[in-house]
Amino acid sequence: MGKIKITLEDLFYLPGAEIFNPDAYKPLSLVEIDSRKAKKGSLFVAIKGDRYDGHDFISDALKKGASAVVIDSRKLKKFSFLEIPVITVPDTTKAYGEIANIWRKKITGKSYFNNREQRKDYCKRDGFGIARRKICSD
Image 1 (cartoon, rainbow, N blue to C red):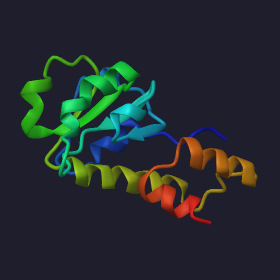
Image 2 (cartoon, helix red, strand yellow):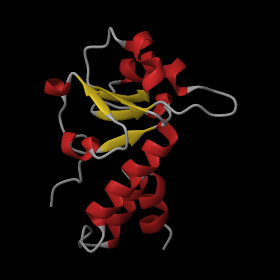
Image 3 (cartoon, rainbow, N blue to C red):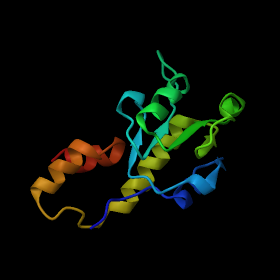
Image 4 (spheres, rainbow, N blue to C red):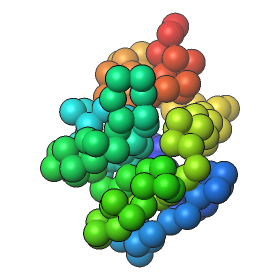
């Protein structure tokens, strides 16, 4: 069975989303909020926290191989030079939760793992957010 992927169509359902450079988008199987963990083919969601603002680390995520970014719509001018897909939303934290919900819906009810080793491998590499807590907590 292939990996679960976040498609361009999935991102259209994010509340208030606008997608720039959509022709360059390829389905992604990794979503990341930590620029240090971004990998080739990942979707980087720039979340503003109490201490750090993920928007300040977008260039780091891109250097690590992120293929698309989700940013706050008020910061679009700052990142208008990007040639990768840019998804703007009113609130990136809520968008991250929505992406996790989309991910969860894709795996709910499916027999995604054939054995315990596949599940452990998933939890180490691909699990994130709500889906990770649900699947990897057993």
